Amino acid sequence: MIIKENYSLLEHNTFHLEVKTRWFMEYSNEEELLNILHDEYFQECISLHIGSGSNLLFINDYNGIILHSAIKGIEIIEETDTSVLLRIGAAEKWDDIVSYAISNGWYGVENLSDIPGECGAAAVQNIGAYGVEIKDVIETVEAYNQLTFEKRTFNREACEYGYRYSFFKNENNDPHIITHINLRLSKKPYFSLEYANLKEILNRYTEVRLENVRDAVISIRRQKLPDTETLGNAGSFFMNPVISVDQYESLKRKYPELPSHTTDDNRVKIPAAWLIEACGFKGQSHGEVEVFNKQPLILVNLGNATGHEIALVAESIRTAVLDKFKIELTPEVKYVG
Ligand SMILES: Cc1cc2nc3c(=O)[nH]c(=O)nc-3n(C[C@H](O)[C@H](O)[C@H](O)COP(=O)(O)OP(=O)(O)OC[C@H]3O[C@@H](n4cnc5c(N)ncnc54)[C@H](O)[C@@H]3O)c2cc1C
Image (tube, rainbow, N blue to C red):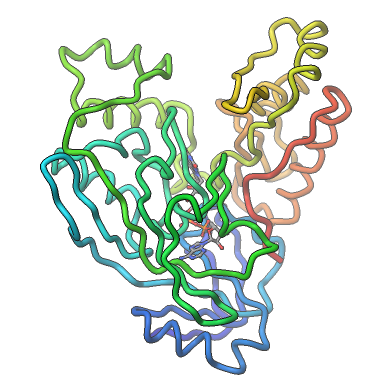
């Protein structure tokens, strides 16, 4: 177990924010986690479990305990002619799992290539890209209830997955800490290639193979997303809003070019990037914060921005979109502090 006091979180958030936590604790197995959860001092403090901080915005120093898992490992726990069931430690890097699956010829996660973060968080967030979400391959999630200390194995239904949503994100539920995720991947070829630019890039290859899909996804992402190594950011700052058909039709009359996508429950998803660009924010800088010039859904730390400054820019975007389109943007990024 690693315990640090007044510890810098600079290496633990992709916005590159210079914030500190009062305590940082990293456990390497379930027994160590249970010891922390049972500790009276821990129970008195505020706490937050993080992964690699690629979806967090620290507004201030954190006056509590930041928890982090070091539980790693990939185990094949079941294998049939058609599928394989993997048990994966929450601290494994998500993209390492994608790469491992592809090198073994297992299908289902290739469209989720190159998404930053760890496996525990991926299951919290229901990460998604190019028409695929992690929920499509999740069989179960193993988690401890932070208040009752009970371990529970959630099947997919119990995870209550929705767009960037899960049981674990619902603040009305007891906080849970994920230790392992269990993914079922297919040994039989199948691809999800509906996304126009993915299809277009794959047309350049003579055949569609797992490796080609991964390469295509990575090349599309690298063209439009900032590299977190050099430019602090947390990916999409806002979720794409979902509105009623009535509201969509009335907006479409006023803005005929408004892009949209119908959801399974017959509502309409609007790209938040389009709304932000239509309000004139794309490429604008406000002090040390830039609305990324290639993708306005991303806020970038140009060097010395604080979390508070990033939150102010996000708030002015939210207000402008609300005024112009009467659409409320909800942050995808989690505010801390
Ligand atoms: C450049 C860039 C591109 C991105 N592209 C995408 C994309 O295409 N699709 C997409 O969906 N996301 C995308 N993201 C967002 C981000 O990568 C995901 O949300 C990712 O799952 C976050 O993982 P993390 O380990 O960094 O988690 P953190 O940001 O550290 O935490 C995220 C949430 O998970 C909780 N959490 C973390 N670990 C655990 C655990 N073990 N148990 C319980 N709760 C836990 C945290 O409390 C927090 O609520 C992108 C981010 C960046 C920076």
